[in-house]
Length: 139
View 1 (cartoon, rainbow, N blue to C red):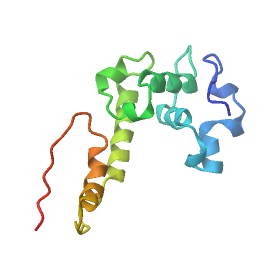
View 2 (view 1 turned 30 degrees about the horizontal axis):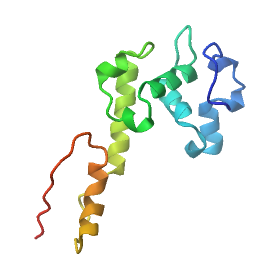
View 3 (view 1 turned 90 degrees about the vertical axis):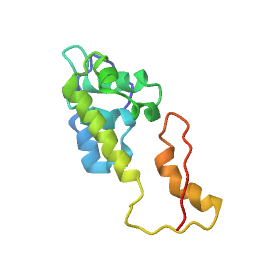
């Protein structure tokens, strides 16, 4: 399905087999675009705009998907068609993804080189907006 769906093309007008939820069931989440995955989270569009068009506008507001993880509730609500509930759903999904990508604290990690330390710290530090100074205490 093209990801540049016109705003007036409502999801009900899209062939059932080509709708994001049905495609996810049939082909898996990896086959969907960022726009389609976000549309599934949003669930509905507005009277004037399809959920796919709304998802596209959300993504374009933040320039890159990577910038979306730093969005605030206020920034999300400022987007026409995104209310508090939809903003909360998006931010909850982003936080869940962040937690899934973090290392498990239960695992023992051995640091033998600067590369090991970098590998240990990078998952937490790649999403930081501001520069941080970190000390690793080796015991």
